[in-house]
Length: 532
Image 1 (spheres, rainbow, N blue to C red):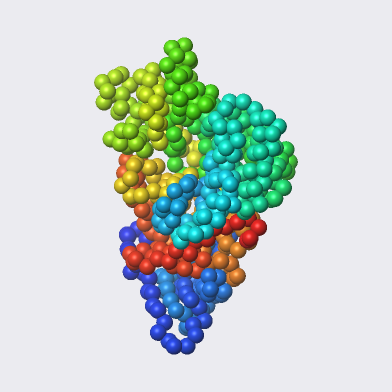
Image 2 (image 1 turned 90 degrees about the vertical axis):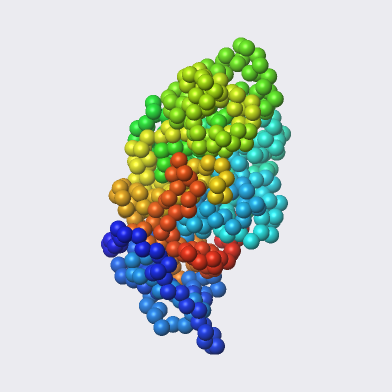
């Protein structure tokens, strides 16, 4: 297999691209010709430069196309990869109607996202997708219906089992979503109100999605001390509902669980041997990002903010809540150090953005102990909560999961605006980080395996037949990058930087991103299962 040349000195990629528009009056055979690139077709790299011809949004030719007529001809330098556009199977694009260009995804090379993860997908699905189709989108979007969303619609945030009528109402909402093109159901069993659901409830709802070929993606009930039990539960759901599973943003949280990926990966392999269709996705970082409330026991959040206020105003109940938060700081997502908890978006105190729970304690003149940390978590939740970054994942687990052939790359990132808040850098750099740091610098996985995890593997999971590969007849979702230059630029300290090394991105045959130039055509579409 060809090993692409890795350039040590940065050369602006724009200098490597020759773009010409045909001035001929006769009919061009192609809309765009990509010449002299190394094609990754979804499985392997070509061993010699190949050309790709695009017409009417489709890839119509691959081979030696030099001298053919085209409206646009792009001359690559022989070392750049022509890859299928990256597919992000865990994306938070709740703000897509305010940020339809989706720049932070496009500039990573992402052309398609699976949205609605962690139990947060929209409902009713048909109404939402109909509305979304009226926007000019930068990316293609596929959607999951969210278990938390439908449970909240039917039952609020009550901590109890549903009645038979309530369960049927939730089933009806899952069916509505699947009828209108959802790709499956997502759960966020760590979060309210999904945390109050039983195994049986989730199985019954997943069966509805399974009847129409949907998948089940799960933010496990626990990713820390209860990780093994959380994986077991997901496998049981997959088996009993007869539905393909994705253990989403798979990881082992908290130092006591570092190394547990050896067990979870063995569980995945064993499950597949007995016919349970399970895969994973993963972001390439040692920090997660979620609400500050993840440190609070979910029973304390039942009923909403007013009920939480009542509980912490009761001395006996507050003592119990405080004790359980301390435990989570020491043993779970808190990482046994107040420095582990970094604020990402604090609306009620923006100067905390980028700082840690320890910084806040010191600012207030308090001893940064676990007890003080628990007090501050309660104070923060009473003020309205906050988005936080939790530095509590072991690097060895990250690498071990990444090496598994069925672990897809996914960002768990959101739509971000430069300079707004202090987001996790994954929202800017997930895919370039894998290609630059873990492939080129560390050699943890090969370039071919990394690209498969970003393209054809997620396409297979979602049942795409027309995107995810560079083949004739496929939709022309294409990402061009230089393997020796691609890298993320954002950091946990300074996240607001777009990556480098991604030179061009085509979505459905339209040039959506071109490094150094302002040209962009928004050609993303709303994908509906059954319309592929």
